[in-house]
Length: 87
Image (cartoon, rainbow, N blue to C red; front, side, top):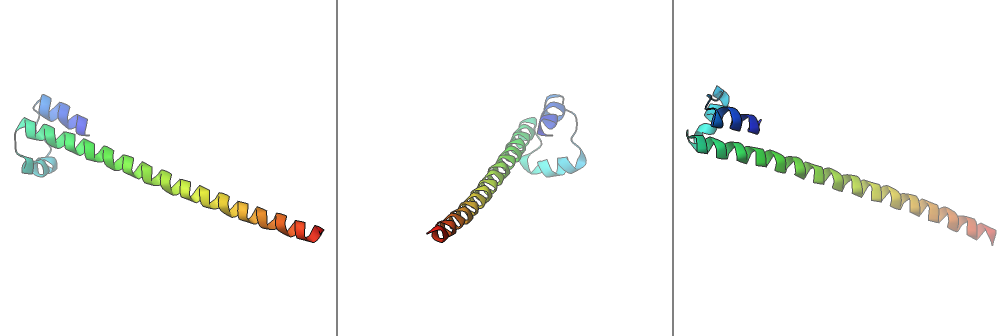
């Protein structure tokens, strides 16, 4: 969407849709202000997306490590119980 705004509204000088025009009005009405707003929006969207990916990977890794640890504890306790019965 940000690239579409840059191409259509900054380079080709088409008017912005009314909801975007009122939102971008705080940056000014020049083409450069619109360019900066579109680039900043694209950067923030990319940053948010990557932050969610990192968070998802972190949660999945912690969950996987927890499951593996639980499996090792159960496996060790069963081996210990079998060894004590064998003696």
